[in-house]
Image 1 (cartoon, one colour):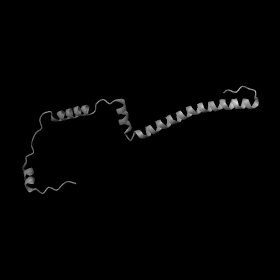
Image 2 (cartoon, rainbow, N blue to C red):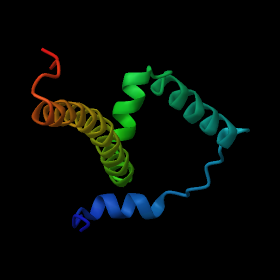
Image 3 (tube, rainbow, N blue to C red):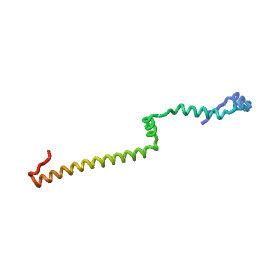
Image 4 (spheres, rainbow, N blue to C red):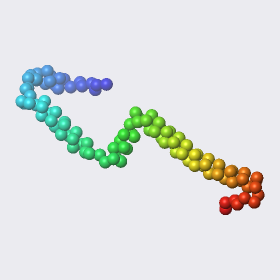
Length: 108
C-alpha cells in the first residue's frame, strides 16, 4: 500500500520538473559490470563442506537425500544381516553336529 502524500508544494515541484535528464554514455553496461563484479566478490569459491551445507539447505534436495539415506540404510542392513546369518548358520551347524555325535570336538 502506497503512503498518501498530501504535500501540495512537493506535488507542484514534481509536476514542474522537466524530467529530460540523459544518462551518461554506456550507463547500462557499467551497471551490469558492477553487478557482475559484486556477484563474483559476494560468492567466493566454497569449500566442500560449505557447498554441501548450501545444497542440503535447498528444499528440492529433500527427496534425493531421503532416497540416498534409505538405500544406504537398506544396503548396510543387508550387508550386516548376511554376516549375522552366516555366523548363526555356523553356530547352529556345530550345535547340530554336537547333538548327533556327542564325542565330536566342539569349537570353544
